[in-house]
Image (tube, rainbow, N blue to C red; front, side, top):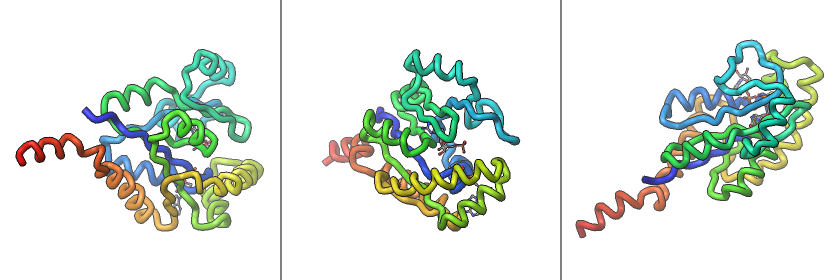
Length: 202
Ligand code: ADP
Ligand code: 5GP
């Protein structure tokens, strides 16, 4: 059995990562999502265990000390970490998994798992990014400013990624991300079983 693949999706807060991924998972229910453990307060509409596990700073630090995270990062005053075990289990079971993490976390994962395929989601412009954060209405104006400042630094690191998807038209962005996942699955090393079977008949 082929091992599962690890995909990293990053992009500034508000660029549309969650929106794109929700659509992608409707098309590709076979792909798993890594649920991060975080210390930020729950937003309206969020549910424990859906995208995040919400814990206190103390609980987070205990998990960190116990080596439970594949990577973690502090982002605008809160901790965000990727639990190690579910990722390792998925990959060992041949299931593909997506990590939606920031640029620092992505660099840490790449250093441990260089085979990971990384995709950076870009907004069409900074002005549109701010508009989306404002329209989402989940942060205060001050938090939106902090996130927009972080966004500029994060976007400079898009060059570290294998693929760039611009989220201007949502359906096109979902199509683009789906194409990346699909074409990566067509790589020769993912097709060795079928190659062997057919070549045996030659
Ligand atoms: P992220 O997960 O990157 O923080 P979200 O998925 O929460 O971003 O999207 C931020 C806001 O932008 C949401 O209100 C969402 O509905 C909106 N949005 C996402 N993609 C688009 C798009 N292509 N065009 C216009 N608005 C979008
Ligand atoms: P938000 O607070 O908007 O949900 O997420 C803020 C940022 O944290 C986003 O850039 C998101 O990709 C990132 N993030 C979410 N989970 C993790 C994680 O487990 N690790 C790291 N490093 N970043 C994460």
